[in-house]
Length: 149
Image (tube, rainbow, N blue to C red; front, side, top):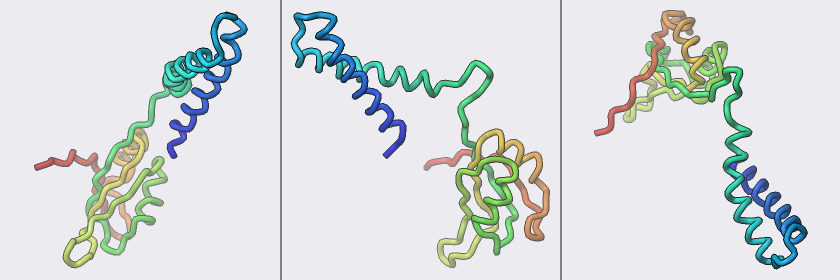
């Protein structure tokens, strides 16, 4: 399960329980079942707000980690995903590596795509483009968006 989903459920339950006990103390004419319903409603409304406050960027300039996809050309045919990932991780956090293969033969085509955080991607373009990797000179660029037919 998604950790944020679990966090939201836990916070909603905590708020509902607090309201369940707090409302009858504040107002004696509210029944316990009504207090539970109001607690669940308030918990459901407040939870997304609390979660967004906790996970929002700080005022110090922290931004959310955007993912950029890089096109990596002129890869050696013997290169595998792990070797490419290790090479690109010197520049930043790598999310995924996809090396393209010919559908008919299953052999690598000599290019692929690396998904990594935007900061690391810019660093990788700057430092890894036109560098030698397993005796081949890499071409590293931002990937173009896939055109859907």
